[in-house]
Amino acid sequence: MKNRLFFLVGVITACLGAAGPAEALDITKTVEGTVVGVSAGSVEVRGDANNMEVAIAVGSDTVYDHVQKLTELKAGDKVQVEYQIKNGKNMAVSVKKLEVETEKGAVL
Image 1 (cartoon, rainbow, N blue to C red):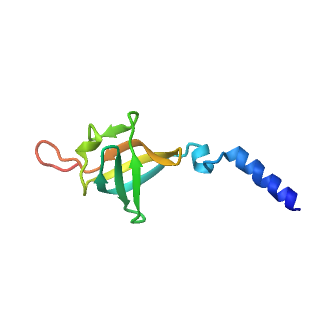
Image 2: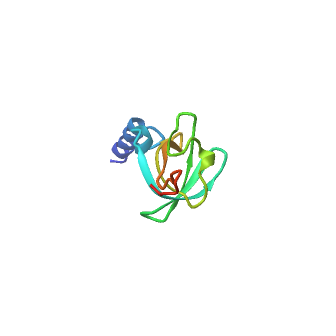
Image 3: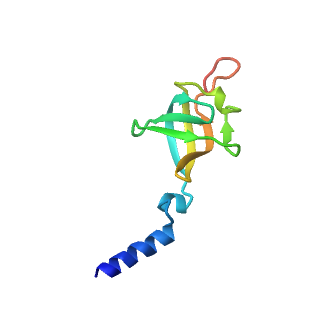
């Protein structure tokens, strides 16, 4: 019985890889919330749904919407970030600023 259990655990681990099911399947997650902080290569967002903070790294392939680059974001901005877990790290697929002020001062 023990041998079967170890075999089963081994098969599952081999199928999913050491990274776990989310990374093995390239599942995209989304967090919508408020920017808590921005650093050279990442953004930290406090989710509206669960009030938890998530640190998400950005790369050269990250797509931006309503901003041109990460440094345009500041604490307090509302954003929606889609990300995947890559090598154990949250990596942004896209970063979208949700409240955008137009040239005439209107908020979109």
